[in-house]
Amino acid sequence: MSVTTLHDPAVRGFASDNYSGVHPEVLAAIEAANGGHQIAYGEDVYTARLQDVLAQHFGAGVEAFPVFNGTGANVTALQSMLPRWGAVIAASSAHINVDEGGAPERVGGMKLLTVPAEDGKLTPELVDREAWGWGDEHRAQPLVVSITQSTELGTLYTPDEVRALADHAHGHGMRLHLDGARISNAAASLDVPLAAFTRDAGVDVLSFGGTKNGALGAEAIVVLEPAASAGLTYLRKLNMQLASKMRFVSAQLVALLEGDLWLRNARHSNAMAQRLRGGVEAGLADGSVRGVAFTQPTQANGVFATLPGVVADRLRESFRFYDWSGSDAARREVRWMCSFDTTEHDVDAFVAAIARETSAS
Image (cartoon, rainbow, N blue to C red):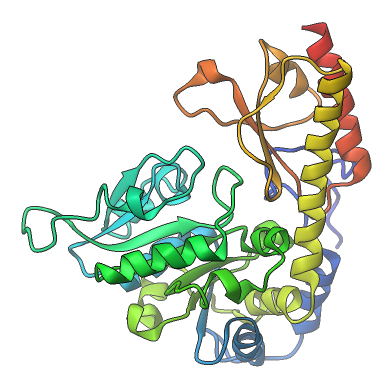
């Protein structure tokens, strides 16, 4: 019995790269992994192959733990890096602080020490606002710094910036975790290998994202420095992130990473974001678009802007996207995300709608 298609595949939006479907090559990999029996819980040939593939990207000696989702990857990874009394320094805009429902604290049992960062990026100086109190039994001990690449505001850390943070953290006896939900977009934009701003730059543990880049539901915790992590074999199960049929999770990541699919997808979504921003900028220059202002540089696959009046609500009647101002609703900041399957037609139609609605406001 076939499943009836319940949605209109022609409908597109700019709310999230999670809205996109699954890349056909990833679907083909899942099908190829099907049939017959494979040992459950990760003792399968696809999970073994994933270890080899990730070693090609990050170097020998890394170990990958496939998981279902980004929150699970972050919480489990950070748990493995911390004792019960440990704390994590992160930007206040970090996904672990804003968008994980309190899971790091409630499930992970860790304290988050957050600092504001206008562009979403930590610096050694910002880290130092919370990097203190070691040995004080009244204070949760800052033992991990967590950064996101690309950040929740669409900005990027250069390899040198990551290295400066890693050296600073290590100098204080802390470890560095990287939330790489959109790591492929970062590598594509920076035009460097994945290792350049991770292992080679001093990152200890990485949450590797696949879902936003064309996978069905596949992420991985990648331990780059074995001394920085302990207990993942047990923590993954404890946190309900251990897939019984893990071959299907691993096969997706192999499909993305064994060749250049991860890079092709990321380059495309980044290019669509640049096309979107360029179209709006051209409209602002010729007067067809009015009142739009960009709030962040467009460095990956997200565009952040402010819109006048009720324009956002009118636009959302045709194209879904999110407000991004948190509690500051008066700012009217929005986020427009592009995906691996965003087309030039999608972008151009959206730019035309922005022009139409801003001119009418």
